[in-house]
Image (cartoon, rainbow, N blue to C red):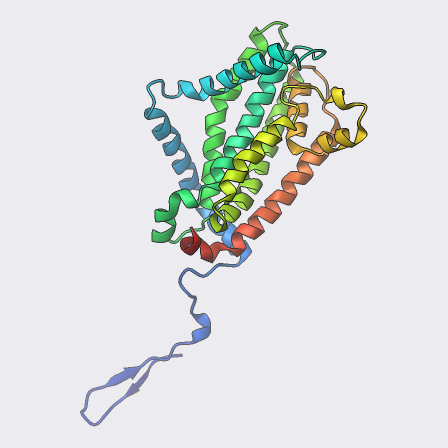
Length: 296
């Protein structure tokens, strides 16, 4: 409404301004979902910059720097090979067990690191969350971009190890399927990170359960054994085949090791998990947008 001028007895003019309350927006109010997604897109440069700077900063604190991005999964793989391959003999009957194990360790570590860090992305940035107004989902998104950047040299190392460790595996056109597989895995990680970040912010004790859960998940994803050992137990077979991480590993091994087209059911299961987690994770995280500065 336009201002109204009034002339009191003193001769000076007093201007009265009336505001329409319907046009006012409370500071820090949660925007509509589509507007929230648009804001996240506007923050894409910040997400990439934050991810790159944290990768460089973390590595500069170590003497070997970026070399640890490669050494960590290699050392983990060597440990699992010694325990499960040599001591327990879980690799019997698996063609090229070393490469089979390498793929399992590298690919599973990508997801476990992403969701563990993503779950803590709000609580680890309490000062930023309380001091600035921005879409909070940028924090778990930045964590996942950072984990992808960290994983790229690890993936290159994985390819080299597959090619140089006997029996030597040839490069085929099916290796290109690794690109959409990683894209799906990243989206899966993002959806699960959003969901866990909301729960950890509200119940911090869940952090301990995440570490325990990822350890169990590791043993249930056929990282260092073959699914064939359960062929006499249809119930366990069915549960394993619905495990999204088993689907990731099975697809990667088919296209990188065995020169075969991955089972379409693996793509369907992984895609379904990814879509559900992205939708549910974003909705759950968005609905609590106004609480993060208070709860965290």
